[in-house]
Structures are given as structure tokens and as C-alpha cells.
Image (cartoon, rainbow, N blue to C red; front, side, top):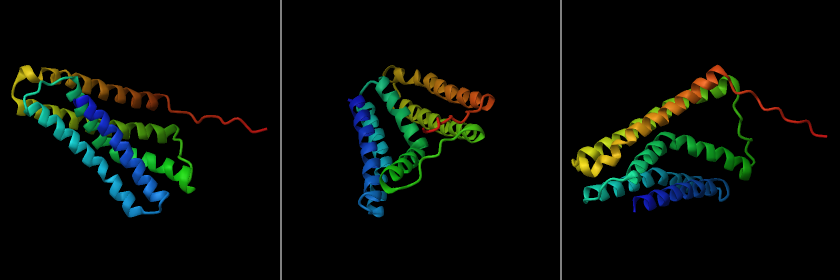
Length: 181
């Protein structure tokens, strides 16, 4: 059931984002667009509520509950950036906005380190959610599956950290565009 909730929330998240951007740029209704974009964090709260109801109602934690915690952590930490990413592309495609900037060199390296900070926040949020659930349920047998997710969170952080280190050592080079004939 939680896996279905995660999928539904992910779809609802992107429907809210795309609807908000469509209202903003295609319908030229910025207030409606902003209202639709505000639905994204509400969707995260719905998912968190569903996880809590399931586990506090006697359910046994599974990998889906841990995935929900990671999803919420990433959504909260990266949500603003995801909306900005979609906004630039939508504005470029449908409203004559400038093309998205492709970062290279130091700019990409700096972005990679900002991502490490956001990933740290995402991991901290997910770990806090897992910890609170474990404490509230107060039954190690029913929450055993959640303990493994602390290792997964460390791996997620480690991968992002290594990514940033690699681009610090070997900065991303600009792509060469072939001349048009």
C-alpha cells in the first residue's frame, strides 16, 4: 500500500508542478500557478501521514516505508531546486524564455558542492523521519527494516560527496558544438 502511495504522490507532485507552470506561462495566471505549485509540499505531508497511519495502526515496516522517508527527505531538500529546474525549461519551451545554462568548470563544481549540502539536508530529514517512526512505534520487530535505511542514507551521501570531489579534481569541461555547414 505504501509503495502505491509513493508512486501516486510522485505523480501528483509532478502534476502539481506542471499544472502550476502551465497556469503561470500558458494561461498567464501567475497566482493560480503559485497556488498549484504550493501543492507539492502538501503532497509530501500526505505521504508522511499515510506512513504514520500505517505503522501506528499496527503495520510492520518494510522497504517501502524507508523509501517513503528518503522520498520525503529529497523532496523537501531539493523541492525548490526541482521547481526552478522545471520552471526554466518550461519558460524556455513555452514562453520564449532563455535556454537553460549548462554549467561547466568552477560553476559546475560549486553546484556539486551545493548539492552535497542539499543531500546532507535530505539525508538528515530522512534519518529524522526514520528515527521518529522507530521511536513512535516502539517495537523493534516491527521497525527492523527501517534500521537498514541508515546505511542507505550514508551511501547516498557518500556517492554525492564523491561526485563533488571528482568534479573538484577534474572539472567538467564545456561540450564542443560542431559548426553548422
